[in-house]
Length: 407
Picture 1 (cartoon, rainbow, N blue to C red):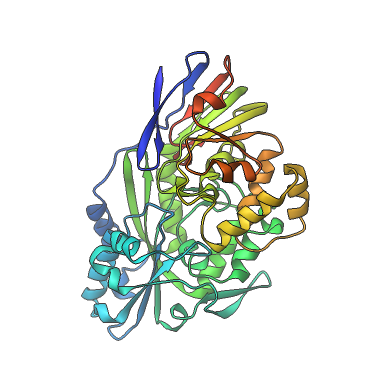
Picture 2 (cartoon, helix red, strand yellow):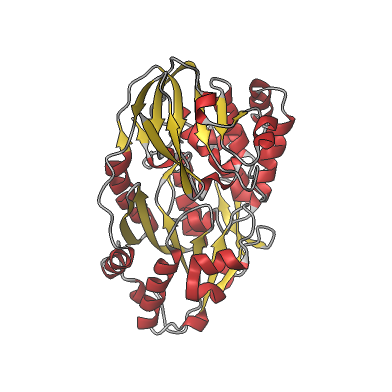
């Protein structure tokens, strides 16, 4: 039996004839027309319609996602601008902020592809150009200086499984995407990430999500238009109050993505694909989703195998480079984990959670353009999945690891 797994914008066929293979696919769900779903969500939001929340002379800042999330921001932005126009807010009163967090800036071509005819409204977020607007849990909340000056703050976003927030979306697009190192450092630091309830797929009683929502209130994120997706495409849209939007779409996502699995596998082969397999920083989400999710299906010492293109190597942004520096200079996973428990700069948190995985499981990255980067980062590079899986293994194949909740 062969299985096609995502690799960059294409696929790679994987065959493990000497292994016992189980393929795990989520239920899926029915895809929707994005524009129609977004329009329906804006017409029937959680809370008042956007047109009732703004005045004709308001300036508006809309934070959208960056290249690491496959959000249909061109469509969502178009729908939001139509709604604003109905309230008398014209296009010239709107600024679009690309929510990079500590990721690299988007190129002009990437912005054009992401936003289409609205690309001229967009500017890359600069985490060094922020202003403090208050504190949450004693942490200064810093926000993009342009965004801090507008009358109304809106956000797009993708509600998908997230290692810390349970599900992404809502206020996160603004608080992290258009935030400064202060809240990114605190929210992604060992003190908060180590608290009970910070877990993949969990929204309620999740301290990470609660911090984001409180910071969102402080920043003034009063309205979001989000979508969620599964293997078949976009599954739904919701608009209005950010907390309600996340919970609404998280329910939709769980129904489509939650999949029961058994224990004791020797290996899990986890598919990623574009845009997440552009660099090692994003690709390692597959390993942490498998091993640190609601249910780890691996036996003690089992391995995780991820085919990934890695055209950007470790990644070019500040966070990606900090991730690479920690992993590439560490003597071992145990030493890395203990050192990072004492603290680290914002963006390096992915190295911390990867260290947690590597203490118990070897991670193999196959088919990549930069095997040397993989080897430098306490992981193993192989040319193919077959070379990374020992003959006779019991193998769980998860073709869409970032859109599958193992339970």
